[in-house]
Image (cartoon, rainbow, N blue to C red; front, side):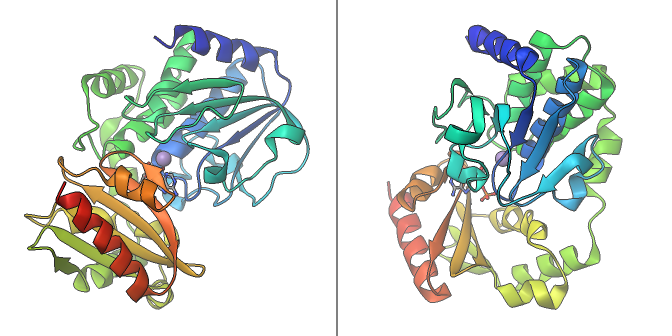
Length: 323
Ligand code: AMP
Ligand code: MN
């Protein structure tokens, strides 16, 4: 189905001379996996001139991945590039407008799997059915690589395992499992990788988790769980923004909860994350606030006080619950 665009992407990559790789704000395992695997793929094709830049850098837990140390944290990238590869980001705002595509880049390749994915480049490989963007990178690598190396496989497996939350989210499908199996055959050690990603939490991270869960609020007859991370909680526990990542899963794990919300204080408001069990479309809620994501995992930013943000978010959740 995507054969032509994948072949075109490989051709553009093979003929370019300089590359920018980027992904979305607060990059997750899938974002980092796509960038690092793509960097290794570029190297296989003899392409050494690339920059990997994210507005929020690379979370510490993924720094062990090959080439992750090349990821720079930058609000804005200067210079010009033959090709920009925008990975796992549904529009240019999601990268934090890290580059001006019109003046700084000759060709723009967009590879994404979000429901809100927009065709804003020259080449678009948008597969809203794909469980992870890493699987799309796998298809590109397979079409053009000389060899699926253990390093590339390790990066891509990280994307699949984190984006499916260890193969237990609703996006887990036969393709994700099949690709994961092929990556294990290519040399990935799932146990070792799982340990590095999930079993090396820091004390501040666990303290943050404990503190935010102790303030968990349950509403709507037990169907909604809301956790809040005020700025001072990060200061108090010594945790970083990236350590807020797993909190919402615990909120959603409460029996009877259909929608979990995490409100994380940021700038003049809150970054809101939503997760649902099967039934509720949280992307529809996020879109109403100018955000997006997937049916069961979505996010957005909302300016204002905690009271105002919580009220507005709970109201929209309420409406979506009754649909
Ligand atoms: P998060 O709540 O940040 O973990 O994000 C959940 C999902 O929604 C991920 O797939 C994100 O890429 C996506 N997402 C989060 N915030 C936004 C936004 N403002 N616009 C579009 N997609 C978003
Ligand atoms: Mn992502």
